[in-house]
Amino acid sequence: MPEEPLVLGIETSCDETGVGIVRGHTLLADALASSVDEHARFGGVVPEVASRAHLEAMVPTIRRALSDAGVTLHDVDAIAVTAGPGLAGALLVGVAGAKGLALAAEKPIYGVNHLAAHVAVDTLEHGPITEPAIALLVSGGHSSLLRVDDLTKGVEPMGATIDDAAGEAFDKVARLLGMPFPGGPVIDRAAREGVATIGFPRGLTATRDFAEHRFNFSFSGLKTAVARWVESREAAGEPLPINDVAASFQEAVCDVLTMKALDACRYTGINTLIIGGGVAANSRLRAMAEERAAKHGITVRVPRPKLCTDNGAMVAALGSHLVAAGAPPSRMDFPADSALGVGTIAV
Amino acid sequence: MRWFRLKHVLLLVLDTATPAITAGLAEVSVDGEHLLAERVTINARAHGELLAAQIQDLFASTGKSVTGLSAIAAGVGPGPYTGLRAGLVTAATFSLALDIPTYGVGTLDALGAATSGDVLVATDARRREVYWGLYRDGSPRTPAGVEKPADLAPLLVAEGIAAGVGEGAQRYADVLGVSVSDPLYPPALQLARLAADRVRRQAPSEQLTPLYLRKPDAVEPSTRKPVLT
Image (cartoon, rainbow over all chains, first blue to last red; front, side):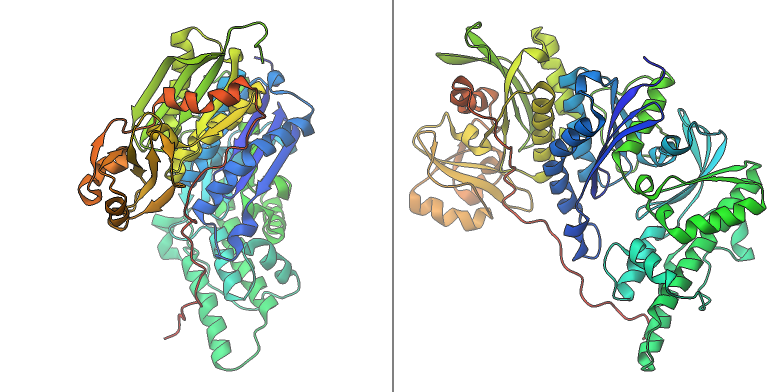
């Protein structure tokens, strides 16, 4: 295998059909088809709608990626695909499609972990990962703190949300404020016009939570606190300062995320923090993490927003990393695993 | 295609619209279809895992090369969604990688193709419903539908249909009032036969559109529940 393997990666764990092509740490193509508009009126991702859209988008998206990268399937060294975690029916479209591609083009296939791919994608932006590193992965489906010692072997979970994912809280609060799905970008925009004047609770940061939940997150109480605040305003017939509510909510989420991520760095003595997942596209989270990390001599690596949200390039990046390290390919009968743990980088 | 140099061409057939994961390799010649090998596993939950492995095994066991394929025929259902998609996306990416055409075949048509007289073809649609169609001497008389067996029964009585094929007919044989015989799942040879004419005349590749026959279950959210009560 070449030092800089050319890998095509397929991602279908949620509502984005992503096909990326990378050569080593170089991004050649990142084609994406999203069904997000079809889910908007339901206020969240509808798994069957997402799965149907993946089937329709699969071949056109692969074609576009190959054309953008200016390569043929024949040139590719390996196919990588998200094996999990994610929506079972959605994952299966990508897994079956990737297997068909690998079989027909006679290429090795790597079924990889979606969360590890969110970490690996930063290599496309900032080069090889400094190991060990702490990774904060925050999206609509996940909120995790991970210790990354060797991305080819496995990552160790340090903490995760005990209820809602951070991105889910953004969606729910957006709905509360009469804003469309997905909530992340609209709240980010509204917050820039507002001031964080309301002191919303920071979940699992009290002293009593320290022993059991030092690195865990909770966003359900925050969401309820926002709802209570909004309703009491409405009940009193007072106008709702939507931008200030958005800013205050966003401040609470980002405060907890960065506080705990930096605590994990201090606790482990690790001075590299990688942030990934859709919520990493949030402008306040990026700024706050940079600012706070700088004070502690910690380097923050956050890929550009388009690489933070789900995409195929991240899967290709992890695949290329595995191929270069000489990892064995997956067998043709590996399953899509909706609950794949972070300890498993490739199936 | 290679008609001028070869006497027959190689066709890959797939169907994943029932609990059967079916893959077959057939030779299509000017005057017939010959099934070289087939792999069938009955497992409603393993389509994504096993289909590709079965195809790999087909090529290994027959000594044929994937690059020798000329076309792919895939059962487009109707069938339960997740399994059905596994077959169609596999066919689609195979077609892309090899630059060969895909042809859609009705799963019920393959089940009913070898029957004679008036027959009900029914597969399990889950949720206590069947995907169904009426066939006469192997040809469809109705478009494929989805129905509760009890709602379908009066039609069968009115039409005087007492014979059925397919796993759905077997499962609800009492309610449907039919005596059931083989096949229970779409046979690979019939899938190949239904696509053979298109293979012979090198018909243009077809978009494989799954027959779900139902809309996704999804409800638009109601107004939010208050937290202050």
